[in-house]
Length: 147
Image 1 (cartoon, rainbow, N blue to C red):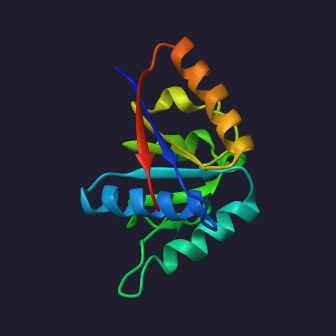
Image 2: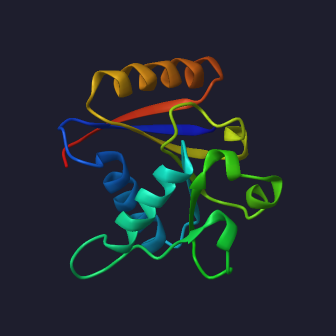
């Protein structure tokens, strides 16, 4: 069964969704899983890129952009509008969605991570996505996260 994990960030932190996405991507990478991380815009993808390269003082999250796939990285990031059939053919294990809406290609994934920030507009968008996934028959799980 297809599963969506909702990660609800409980506190207000700058760039919270990008920091949590980096943490999830790092965990997936260490588990030898492939992940596609999509954002709402190219600007958000650039912010995520910077955060992943400065993940913590001692390390970074190795990744490529969707357009710069060299075949070595297990993590790819980019705007949801840049995802093509060729990108989807790379056989990812997990989709990490940072976009405001559910990507049209969500059915290509058996696991999806949805990150919801603590502000009211993000929560409202998250509730809408939750209802859509529920209607489509996805198994839904909730995780409370403190950054």
